[in-house]
Image (cartoon, rainbow, N blue to C red; front, top):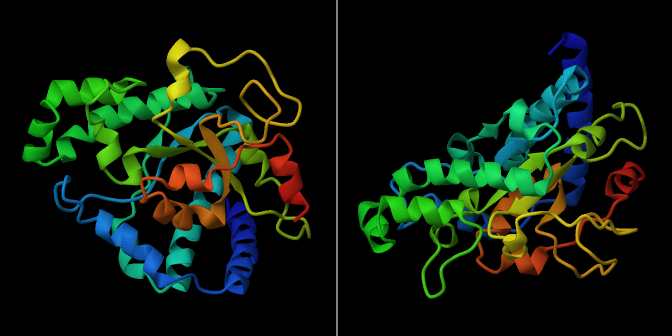
Length: 270
């Protein structure tokens, strides 16, 4: 990244730092969930935390905003943990990026989810303790379950018994990059937007996303704000907090908000 772009990123980060500082410290107890997840009984020692990121937009015009988004993302994680006095969690945070222009250029949530499942099927089995792997039916069965959109009735899905890193992922598309395009001196500069999806998404049974498009909402078949479509927007400065929340097995349904089409534009006006 050029020095000019780095300077711009620094200005944006400073604005975000000011916003986070105004919010005040959160309850430190919320971080106990992430701390506990690092010593999860089903995982081998020294596992990491943090959502995997799927890159869904490519091409020369995307390279600069993509690099800026990643720089802001890394700085935001560090700054959030500093403000929350939780810097001991930083060395265990890992940013893993799934990139493949041939298969992921223009990817929607369905394609991003498939790529994430493939990563989980390759990564998680080697991190499970031997006794857990055996209880789940062995290596082959665990990998098959992780690749499948559905779980066999009356069986345990491997992703359901591990921390959020293997249950949810971030995907970054053109909408997300557009959310970082405002200049740092613009009074409407916004908190960059990320998209987060759940890997365990039942409505994929037919294997194809709906071809119908709603008027006010992204995804789904209706204009019902309560319809769940398997992903939602999160502000970048909420990334650490969202990871902590999703350590609770019921948190996705508790915090889920259906994504609306004007999210990025409305965020510009904050």
